[in-house]
Image 1 (spheres, helix red, strand yellow):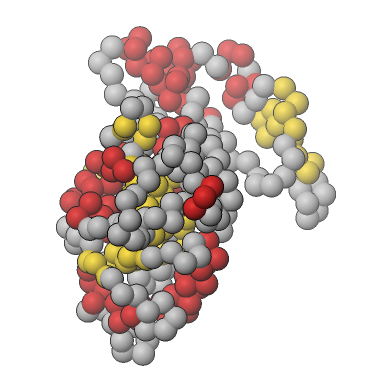
Image 2: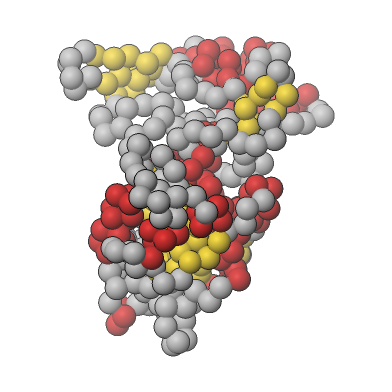
Length: 330
């Protein structure tokens, strides 16, 4: 699924000069809304072009940076003064789906730091932990907890207008394709043991039946603040400069939620206390259920000693054990 990405910066500084510099740096990190998988031609700074594959029209995208006078930190600070984030992004950054609110992890998340540049592989000696959120928009996140509490987010699966039973069939198929012969641990929405699907069975009961036959199901924390705090702990930590939460670039919905889709909305000028329920919130709920409990379980797939390797870059397929290095290069 393709969802337009957002990256809403947060600027807070008492010194105007420092604020201008920080604001300019933050705005420069906004990821442009460009069509996926189409050749983009940069005619000059601030002017890009591509061909619409359906009607063959040539599309030109003119950004403010095409005007040299509108590139400076001083111009940005002066023009943006008094504007809300959504208006600024829509008017000057051409981010049309900008949300009027505050991204949930705006102070901890960094696209450049937390998203891998290449596809991540997985360690067959560690269990694959699946986080689940149920409902009309079910979501499942696949992660592994590496040594030194490094959470590696490998894949995601997001459903739209699909019942949970059919969704579990798809998750089972993808699990076998992505992680053959892996051991799986389930982390679920704690209300899933009470809420029922269309056939009257609870969502957790659906996971224990065919085709998943889940053996280990753990309930994530229910308190929203505690759940988000668990994710924040991973985002804020690092090991020798390496992120303790690293996301595979294939997890587009999760990343776009981090970039601004998962957001606190404004109501009568005040931010709501709970994030908005939207396309991005369900996969983030699934991640929170995993993060809130994963440190309390044994994630070993076998009783053998775990080789402390770094996540491998590649297709995501299971490497054979003789090929496993003592320490893979990042």
